[in-house]
Image 1 (tube, rainbow, N blue to C red):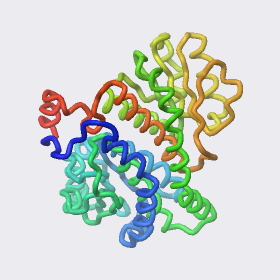
Image 2: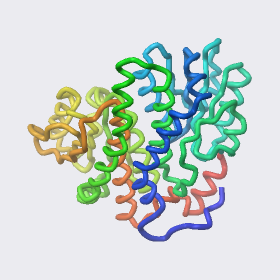
Image 3: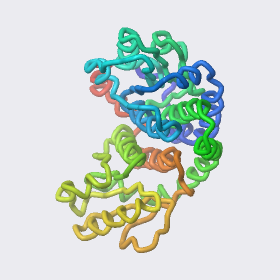
Length: 359
């Protein structure tokens, strides 16, 4: 894993360009997923679907699984960490299929998961931006995300394009009224993502609060729990900021004693979770921990919380809109700390050697 030859040394880094090109990349991913006839045919005859990955690819697998369950409730869709699939070896039966997510197509565990799936006798599909990479060669089929040029190691566009491509392929399998509604929402997704990019100035305003925090707790429920964990991963990768991704109700049940005034809660709370998000904001205010509320809902009755209003209304694909300002946040915090976000710490030799020791 040598350092790339074309390192940028100042803003805009590759990560910034790739965050901003996501609406166009997601459009291509939707078109490619909808046109993947072999993958669609495989999904039509599938009853149980495993989606595996590591790191950001695992978060994409989780988010895609949630969307696919909405598309076709009869599917049993499970997101599994690739390592767990390889070593736990689930009992497989006819109708099962494995999707292995790996943007660069070189993830050791994703490749091993494909090999395990083939030994278990189930069809395998590589979901990747690099169709000729090892995971694509190992799998029976490839679902290309349509973006094979990501240059930043802080993956952003590969996250959103994976979810979009899998959703588009899944939607080709059904003709229900729900599916038609989801198709309309998916078609409108790139425009919502463009609007989310316009939040950059508001995000920059919050950078000192985030960068100065002892730890940042990203909190969400449902699909936004995955967004919270991906946001924490991005902030850690790019900025070496201590961060945690947490499910909303779990945060309320046991984790509050960890909070101090120098910490920060960042809630990802569309409208905002039936008022439960406001419960957390009020509890945090009582213990003296500041809160940022990221929502497409009303900013009223939030106490002393700061608000980041995202475009909406958010539907089934809201997670792909919510992640955009959080990607910008991790990028801008890295700049504030004079770090190169593209290298996710590997510009320092010991971290590069550490990554090479297990990749």
